[in-house]
Image 1 (cartoon, rainbow, N blue to C red):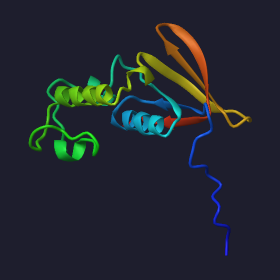
Image 2 (spheres, rainbow, N blue to C red; image 1 turned 30 degrees about the vertical axis):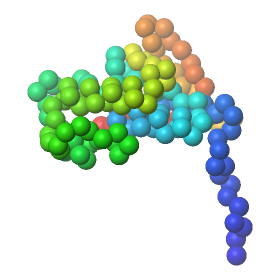
Image 3 (tube, rainbow, N blue to C red; image 1 turned 45 degrees about the vertical axis):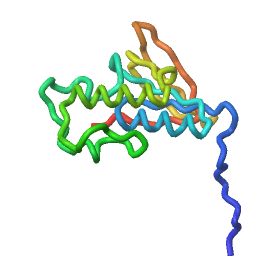
Image 4 (cartoon, rainbow, N blue to C red; image 1 turned 180 degrees about the horizontal axis):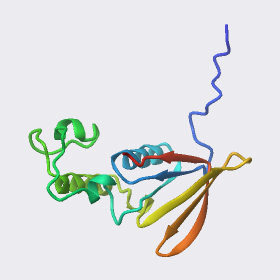
Length: 147
């Protein structure tokens, strides 16, 4: 019989930093869930706001999945299920951010240009924001860039 002890801690080490690349649906829920678990998490989003590909898709795009399935389980979509237009879905994501108070964990207009896992086990992430290059270090890196 093996040991009943797990090598994975249930609580993150104090100050453990997580960078999440992409501020679409997956990046936002990753930010929320990680913060609830005590991680110091930040989303790096290339666009000027949340939504990822949905923010920049063509104006007359509609979801191909109903709002019932496209919504988060802990943040129900108001009204009956339907195929919502792109702009309405982006507004839903913005309400999600506001409801869970995630604004301070979002870095918009941040173009990630590279990421390297160093020998120390930490990630070195290069990005550009407002014309300025920067290098960030993180204990963990999550890629939520969608398609």
